[in-house]
Length: 87
Image 1 (cartoon, one colour):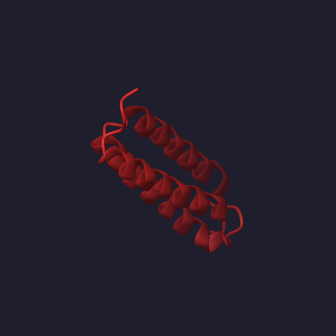
Image 2 (cartoon, rainbow, N blue to C red):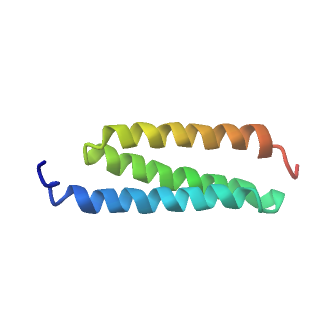
């Protein structure tokens, strides 16, 4: 078992932080007033996008793929459940 490269550990921590922020924004969509849902969706996508970019730069391909799938799921939920609310 080789120790992780020093640059990978901080990247993993930062990817996890960004993912957590994205999940919090996603969860907030469910409690938001209709006119605020899009802002939380945009925040969730922004945090996940940052996490994906960092994961790719840090050679964390499986994590990047998982986060891409999660972002797509959140986008689908927004488009099917929230997009037309409040209009």
